[in-house]
Every structure is written in structure tokens, then in C-alpha cells.
Image (cartoon, rainbow, N blue to C red):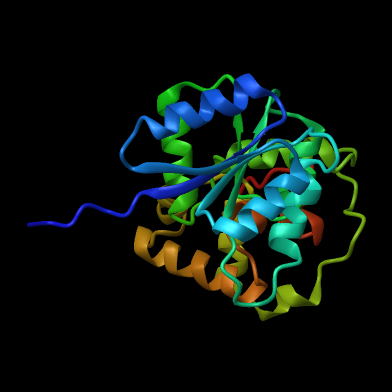
Length: 235
């Protein structure tokens, strides 16, 4: 007899009671999820997560006492090496909320609109729990291009980091294509390689750059100047 998979353990952090209880009730209605706790602000979320060690946190951005960005930074950025940290899924009202970019930089794995359907919510938690970035790469690129505040064609504020020198020419090319919003399938077709080969390149790139996921890879590509906002590759 096959043993059923262990439910994904979730914490919901939002200062609005209706949103908090609504998301919690939806997830708790599915056997694959278990709500282990809820939190009313960022400080509460940090405390709860350190106590119950969830797999995923649904984190609102704008909360009293401590916002979701600061909470994400405490949970992920300040965690010691090797610590068991949750994946953070940011809740927001707008898909181009300026704070989303800061949350992604803090280590969040993506974002979910608060008016998302139940199925979209379930899928988002599954994706993030599996260690993937929720954002479509094209959406990530649009966010970053919007909030780097650089005019089209202007060189990035920072020079390319020397850490990029650890990448091979092929890994750099793959990173550029990821930042351009291409999926693994599309990259494989562009480079005439298999999808598994692309996945290997992406995985090695993340490891070398010390990044958690694809979303952070795109942000790194922009912030190091490897990609210039407003310019698109045409080759």
C-alpha cells in the first residue's frame, strides 16, 4: 500500500482577518496542505515560523509592527547557513506593487495576487514548496524593468559582479535567456540542446551564484548589469 505524501505545512501571515482566515480555510480544505499557524504581522510571522518550521509562508507585504519584506529578510537573509528555512510566497493586491521587487530581493520565491482563484492558490503553494520560483520569467522581467528606475539603454548602476566570472560562457548565455523571460523549453530550442541540459545549466548557475531560485537569478542578471533594462536581445 502506497503511503500518502506528507502534507505541505503552511503559515498564513496577513493583518486582515478575512484574507488570513480565507486563505487558511481554502488550503486546509485540501488534504495535501496543513495550516500549522497564522500570523497577524511580520514579527508574529517570524516568531511563528521559528517555532513551527513550516514549508511555505504566505506573507502579506503591508502589515503593522513589521512588514512582510522585513519579515522575509529575517527569515531568509539572516538565517544561518544550513538552516531549515521556509519558502516565502508574497501576497499582494497589485501585480506591479513596488514592494514586490524588494520582497523578491529579500529572498521570496514569488508572489500571488490576493484575488487569485482557489486553484491558483493551490498551484502556487505546490510550486513554491517544490523549490521552484512561482513567477513566470516574463513577469519577473517586467517587475524588474519597472522598478530598477533606469531609462531604456542606460547602463546599470552597478558593474557586473566578479561572481559572474565563475560562470561558463554557456551558463552566462542561459542566464541571459532566463532573464529575457524564456522558459527551459524555449531556451532548449534556442540553443539546440535538451531541456534536461538547460535544467542542469540553470541548477549549476544557481549554485555558483548562491541563489535560491530562478527569480533571484533574474534579479541578479539585472542588478549586476549583465542585462540592461529596456534592451532586448535579438540574436
